[in-house]
Image 1 (cartoon, one colour):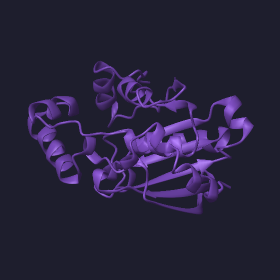
Image 2: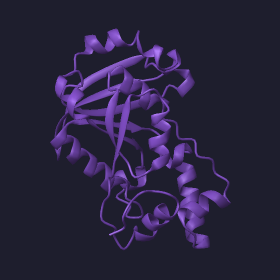
Image 3: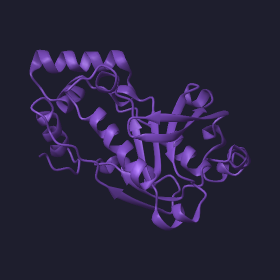
Image 4: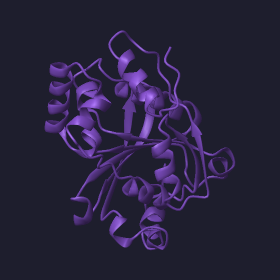
Length: 222
């Protein structure tokens, strides 16, 4: 179990590596049983700079233990995908990646940080517009984003603040996206090793995964 007293004490030291505005103003903790195991569930509420954003994290293991220091915990920084994770959409691999990340964290220990960044941070309405454009014009997701001139608003500073708060300075990042790896690497960590998070393609998301691969994601489509 994570010691909440230690977390509260560290809120005073986090600004040394992250702006004070990135320190969560409120923190809550409980236990959560999932189909993959039992985790500690942490809730973080940030201030106005981050639109009072609320972020959840699933933790397995003791982030202050020597074991974590020696083995490098697994970390997944995951942006919300309502269409797949709530409605069961087959058009992307987001829900499958989340499920695989939970299984890896359950087996090897680590943390999943769940960011409220639907549709590259543009929100649910923008996702519907993107899907509509893809269907009407028979183009890929990347092409739709490009032609609609939709910005990528994803920001990993809150995830970095949470990791610093938990004193996680070196870790294995579960991602196929080199841009996410580079973004987090610039936020004050000692060591980040990239670990792939690949799931089998289906007839419904194969083109989506191939499109990701064409645009720099490091994955095998199988």
